[in-house]
Image (cartoon, rainbow over all chains, first blue to last red; front, side):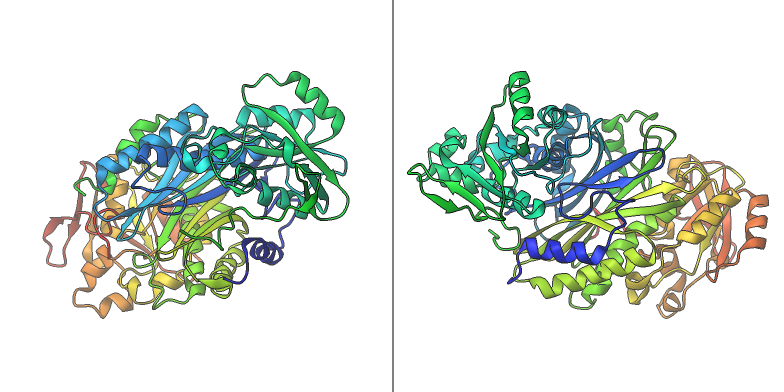
Length: 306
Length: 306
């Protein structure tokens, strides 16, 4: 594949030519927004999780796989600072999967559905002679603030992340908590742009930079590195590039950030790691003071396959 | 798999315990309905189409596969007598699928999106070393009438179908026209229950019967058999049991049916094939006058896999 995901998304966006009055947010963000009469709107996202790519049926339990499938879309709801409404799930089941295993997958889906108040309201199932695939589509609604897009970072904004980054493959990728409550507080405080870190910090910050047409600089020394990333040979690289952290990455004016920090009452960490700047490149200040380009080096879903 | 699709759907329905004020239509119909403030609501459906089951990448073009993936969900919108709003599509792409082929799949999706005014507003893509899977989730809105459910057939209703049935595998399964306009006229005329024939007439009529807790009797001689079904060794069997007709099957009071018939200005055929009755079994009057049980003998997505 010579064309990466980003270029293709740009192609699809151009081809769809969406009416922005009906669809204020279209292709290329964490969710798309559909305007309805009387000032209502809903947002929608979809994620397909595949055996051997997003989970491994030999290692993860079916309950974990069900939970993760829902949690990935719930994290998209958080990335937009919206409130989950409902989900539908379509599954491709390996031959002889059996009702008992399907019920365990379903149990994991329901754990997430109940915990985050996002009921499973429909679905579709087919069996085939290939591995398990789980596709979730989720609806959400705005939370009293405008949904926070990827494309609206402003020069001077502080770049922040929730939680600690890297090494998610060890355990967190199956058990992560979508940052739904935190995201509403962040939006209320006045965040300008937000994304959830699913492809890795370096890739997802580049998404914000590219879509906002702004530059960015982060300080390596400020990046909150997880205990699991610290066990790797290159903890900083792990925190920068590992996928599936499912933490929030957002940009917010300095004053709003100070207020947010003062009022922050969540257990999860809140860390300022850099600033939105002019230009168009994402840079990183290394511990030795050297400034380098921070290229997207995380997960490109069309470039890497296990 | 000892448990069929129907039993599992009943299990999932029981487990979800949906709030019917928020979700007037839940698991087990063609779409689920989500109530929003100010009398608004949206409906949602999802369908996953798989290589070797719903299409064959060796025989169908990628444009046809894209079109069919959308049209299957559009047919669900028709089955509820609702107006399509937007779609999101997630795809699992075989390794080395390449941008060119993805663009052809996308082209087929856009053909359906434009033709039926249902824009593609988002999606997700991942590559893996397995065959192509395409999952569509689609939103629709009520069309001024209540969405028509599967579970509300009344005794004495005429059972009707649009179009001609059977033999879809030969060609129609890739090119069918979702009966969107027809369905709105049918709902406006006062249909009590409706489903699209995706699993075969015998199976889908049994869905209406079971969910409505009513019996049904159809006359074999009245079933409109397609030219392609007539080429098979048993045309009636083909019309009764073949999947993927994507025609509408509905029940409507006698008087409303007469009115609907008088006003029917669509090219597609409208045929009364039987009546909703008491009891709980679906029966068929054979050409020789013999009355037999019409068991669901169409496609059970968990029992048959190519």
